[in-house]
Image (cartoon, rainbow, N blue to C red):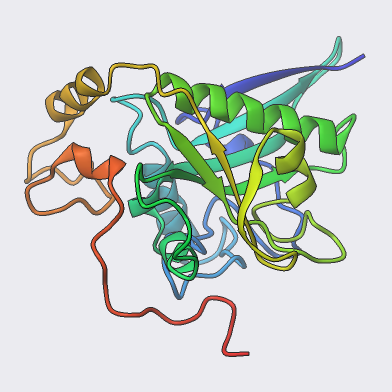
Length: 251
């Protein structure tokens, strides 16, 4: 019987990220969540700009590696013969994902504080021994990781449809199995939220962020931070901005 192992994405494992369910999508270059006008149909690695886009995506996922870990996790299925990556989850502070901010702004009933971290992507390949169970265990592993970082709440924005695995966040049923509760929205565009304990000392965590942040001249911090680079903003909702385009379309 295959066993599951969960590991944060690093430089060596970045290329292990499996292909998502949506045809033509490519996780290593996708910027759907990082930009409002981004797309899931990422450029393949051998395309003209594929190398540059893959390098940028890698930097984004590993932005917090020196502080508390990367912004992605892999699920490996192992047996006596092989070790295969069958699941992938992407997550991070709300400030790292403009599209997630835009979606969240449509639901004023959501708690304003504490600002959640978000799981933007949850994908499990059809080759997994039990796709739904693997997704549930991967979500639980991500929540355990975030809990240890002092995060107190995590949200996700799955999309309804005939095949819940096609959109990048994965099926809502898997979130429900991992103890997420619907906090807003409808069956088509629900918002799922799970409260964490956040038992890690938040002051110590912020201190570690301050000590680990690169200098202003260094380009090793690709995610946008406020001019004063206050790490505590990772735990606050972003300041209100002009209304963004509707990510669901105008209908």
